Image (cartoon, rainbow, N blue to C red; front, side):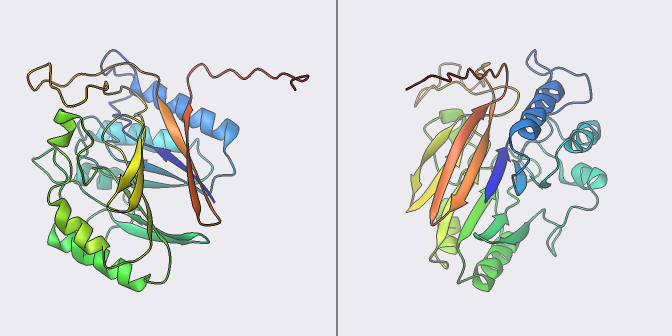
Length: 266
C-alpha cells in the first residue's frame, strides 16, 4: 500500500503571500508532482495546519486544489486550523459523535486512525477525554489488526524548544491509551516543519517538511527570545510504503525536480 503524506500547507486566500512565499502555488506544485509520479497511491493524508489562520477562503482554495488529486484524501486539523470554518467548507468530512474531525479507515495492511488534536485558544495539542474514549473504542474494535496513527502534534519533545512548548499535552495519558493495543506500527505527524524519524516508547514515527516554509534545525537553544524562526529549505512530501510487516517512508522534494538517466551506468 502506498500513502502520500502532506503537511503544514498554511494556505491563505488565493494569491496571498506568507513569509514571502505563495503557499497556494507551492501546494499546487506539490499536488502536480504527486499526480505525475504517484497516481497509484491508495490515499493522501494532510496532517494539519491546512490554513495559516483558519480562514474560510483558505479552505475554499484547498478544496479547489484537492480536485487535482485522483486519490482519496484525509484531512486533519492542526493548531492553525479553525474547526468550524473547516467544516463549513468541507461539510461532508466525517466527524466523531462529539464533532471532532476523527475517523478510521480499514485497509489491506491494517487500520489507519486519523486524530484531531486541535483545541481553540491554544497552539498546544490537546486530546481530551472525549477523544480518548473514541480512540480506546477504535483500538478495542481493531484489537487484532495493525494500527497506523496520523495526527498533527507530536506527543513528545523533538529537541526544538519553540515546538516542544506546543506539543501534545499529557503525553503519558496518550501512551497509556495506546498501550491498550499491542500492535501500533507507526505514528505520522506534522507541526514541526522538519523531516524527523525515530522511535518513541517502542513506536516508530516520522514527520515531514511543510509545503510552504520550514523551521530551522536549532536544537536545544532559542536564540530569538521566544520568537519563531522560519527558513526556506526546500519543501517536500512523504511517500509511505507499507507491506510485509515493514513501513518505509521516502521524503520527496517537489520543486525544480530533475531526473537524469544514465543509460550506460554500470
